[in-house]
Length: 162
Image: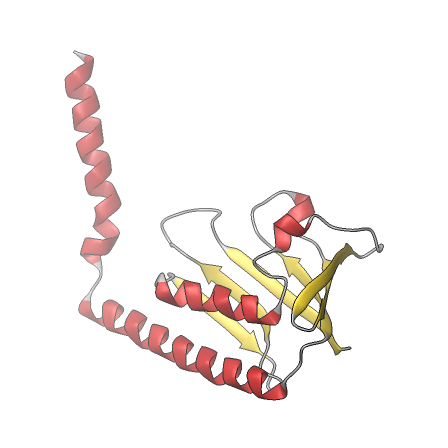
């Protein structure tokens, strides 16, 4: 008796998960591709702008607005020397757990986060770049509009050359 119910529920669930992909219009698909191309061009432009600066010693404050544990949100101050992270500290100067911030602990890694979202065809990607130096100041990613709490909201503030 339970097996037919389980099979029926499984079929309905699998059909329900496919509806958004099936129901996209050609205009929506074209618009998503256009946004993806624009995000890729903006990424390339700003990554090149950053690379032209030859900045290898700097610090910034990072806040992560993810649906995650408070210790992984920050804000934290990240210091980089010769392109390598030398410290990640909380606002009070205490060391933060570097594992929570390893994907975001240099400006090139932040560009990689954006590149990954583009390659994964994130449902929504909004990035604000610093117009003078090219580094990202705000990264908002919704990887899938059909999934809750997988979004990523990074804020990069107080950038300073060291």
